[in-house]
Length: 309
Image (cartoon, rainbow, N blue to C red; front, side, top):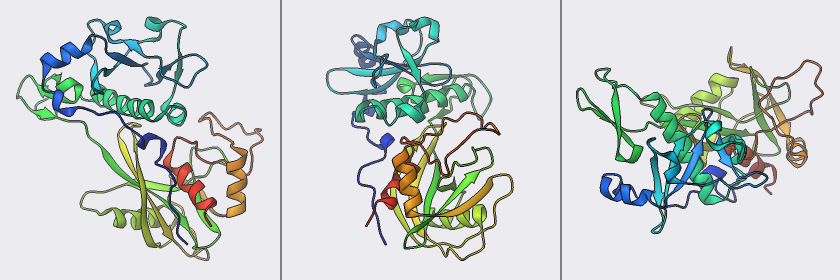
C-alpha cells in the first residue's frame, strides 16, 4: 500500500519571504524597524497570543526598546521581527502558548514565523560564546549569525536532521512505540537523529532496528517539518516490516512497542485525545491509545496512513 500526506505538516507552511538579502544591510534593517511587527516569546519560548483567539499578539517593534530584535522576513510592506520579553512587560493582555499546541492553530504565515522565531532565538541563547576561542560573540545579520569579538569567527544557526518513520505491515497494521517517560497509553512513530556519514535511508534502517529490533524494507520519503525544540528538522518516512518479527526495545528509550490495527488508530484520531505533556498519575484513567498532537508531523503521518484506501 502507498499513502501520501494530503497537505504539508503544520510547521512546513511558511509563506513569508525571509528576505535573506537584507540581513547584511543594517541601514535598511534599521529603517524597516519603523512600523515593523514584533513577535514576542517568553522565557519558555512560548508565543504571545491574543486572548481567546488563535492569532499572534503582534506588537509594534518599537516595544522592544534597546533589546536586540531578530529579523524574520519582509513582505514588501511590513518587516517581521522577534525577541524575548518577560510576562511583566506585556501584562495580562496576552495568553502564552507552546509551539506544540499553537503550531497547528495558527495560519500558514504565523505558524512559520513562530517556528522560525523559536528556533532562531533558542540558538542565540545557546551561542553566546565562540566555539573556537571562547570569547563572547556579537549577533549580526539581523540575528542570523554570530561574530566573535576575539578571533572574528562567524557562525550560523545549526539544524540537526532526524528521521521519523511510520512502520506498517503493508496492510492494516502499524507499529507504534512508547517512550520511557510518556504516559501509559501514549504511542507514536519512531524517530532518531542522523549520524555523521549516514544517509537518511540508512538512518531509518538503523534507528528502527535499534529502537524496536525489527528490519524494515520499502523505505519511502513522505515529507519534512522543522521542529525547533530546539533545532531539529524532522524527515518523515514510511517503511514496511513483518509483524511476526520479535520486538526488542532499546534500553532506557522505549518502554514498549505494539502493532495497532487501523480501526484502533482511527478511533484514537477521531477521539482526538491530546497528550498534555503532564505527569501520568498512577490512578489516572487513560484511553487505550493516545497519539501525538496535531502540530507534530507524526500525527499527520499516522492520520494519512489510517485513512488511506
